Image 1 (cartoon, rainbow, N blue to C red):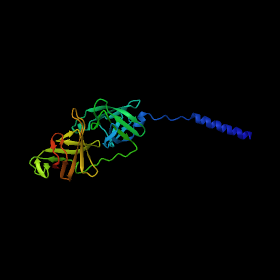
Image 2: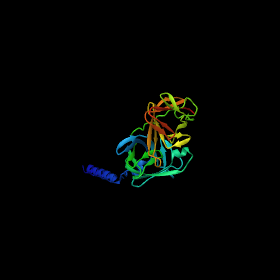
Image 3: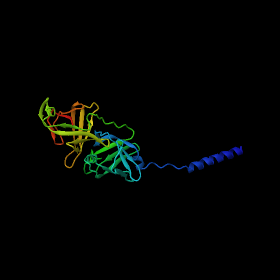
Image 4: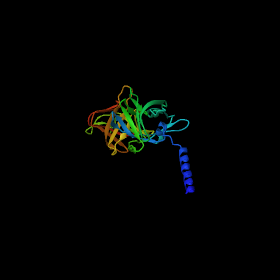
Length: 280
């Protein structure tokens, strides 16, 4: 009995000693929570109300010698990088404006964002408290708005169409009876314009008149509605214009509007008018 008690005591002492030597893994710090995850956009919220969902997926990659950034699975080029403050409340990103890249302009931009929420699964970013900014050059964040991300959901894949994003783009030209601005199938004016719908870094962008416009585009699931979003540009406020697609083929694109609208000040739509373009 004494031998049994002595051996039992030794076993207990061994377990206690081993347990006291085990190290407790430290809780992950802010950078560990942020880095090397694909953050999926929940949407842009203004005063707590969801306004738009730009369907953006961002990954802040921890790497040497510089951290890198992925957007929609594509690594941003041109020295795009990020740093996070030690307390996890300030995120600095440097990137090439995708609109400027289309114009062959390669000047990096730097933005400072407030991280208002960062957990293992959720991320919320805010812009400056005194001015509007365009996150990554395209997503407008006002002083009262924020963009929310998570890792657990599935970001919706942006709808696209091979005809819409054709390489040559679209045109309405002077003297062509089949293009221009129409009302009730009657041509009102030539309204010459060229448009091209493309994607840079996985982000949908618009080129108008051969010049990249500071705007993004989205299609609805049935490809019957085209929405163009213009971010704030200088003194010009952000704006969203939605068009009905009445025809989209390999050779024709017809955009209609039920309300008054304008495309970059080039073509002005009256209510119930339609811009008809052909393949360029």
